[in-house]
Length: 576
Image (cartoon, rainbow, N blue to C red; front, side, top):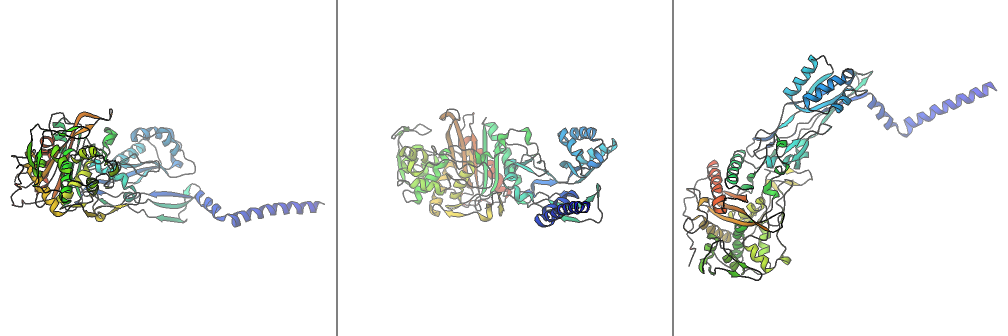
């Protein structure tokens, strides 16, 4: 009986071991092998270096400098964890309890304490800890982000916030955010076996090398951007305005050489500025463009064969339409103006009379082709598409107001690209902030390398419109002689539009003033658009934005060595 009981007991034990062996080796061997390996291994992140954001000449707008991560070995720091956590949290502005937990982590010889710390600061803190008698702290390479030009192009470049808990970058604005995957690269990993709390010298060791991020080359000219921001700041503050934007485009390629906002912020110290400054207002703000839009209206009319720049109109002092009378900004009796004179003097009445020649829906088609009512998709978050009423909803009253730049909304880059279409002989080029091509985080490929072109109006229509825009600068007949650039032919157009107040949803008595133009007029190289919101000095587009345009255009022409064409400016008759 005793033998039988013994055999039964042995059989039960053997069965248990056999069942466990089947479970470990037959049912799920990989899971248990991974658990065993994990318990006997340690891994260390090999940080990838984030790609730089460069201007068009290769100058860094965002770069990675030497930095260090501070690492703790809990097997050595546990005993002094309380005092050491106090020192580290104060010196590095870290959460005391998180640091304490890491310093006391069980069964670990590697814990991050802080990542992307400037090298000098990290070395100083570790040295201070050692001098105080603490052991178990070391450092490893971990590049840190910096912005050498500070506020220059900050509205485009963006910035990185405090790293995430795993030490990875936290992009919060601009290209840093839109192209995070493209710039970030992939961290590597070094894994090694440990035993009895120590690394096994001849144990299995694997290393996956880090893959550094890609550099992103923008179309921005850093020096021109710096100058544009200073001119814009002076202009807005001089006019006692709320805000402003200035866009400088290469006429022939559509590349944005400068996209300036005021107010803006310092990318090195973003926390010192309101969050409202983090996005580019040139893309996010929508407003009614006013009379700058008239050049799109007349270019479409000429292309459609309805008028020429010499077509004559008798312009009355008031134009009574269906819902309300239309006035000009200046008082006059009945005046005889050519279409060139209507543009030179910025007559709302004359523009509406000319626009009456459009077939139903025709003006809407032209404005859509110029790019209004849709995003430019240049790679920055917060871009708006503006507001262009659909053809079905565009009443005759709405069409009247749209003809001279009210009852529709645009953003600054959108309008700059539309005017650039006229400068480029009637061919619209998609604007670009990225030189070449790069891939957004959503997988979309953008940049000047994939920008598309399409003809909007004929070359003749663009030329006739350019000749009318030259008369705007003429001191004898035009409204913006302050936009002239000595020695160069300049074509341009002023804009002054009523603004819709956020609180009342109505015109609140404030204005948007602007100036758009290009030079040399007969062989355009640059298109520039300057906008100021709510100037309080009583000035209009010609007196406020015109001089800023002149400064920016003069600087751009000199910087790129563009010579005057030597031809005579347009002398189209303004009256008849």
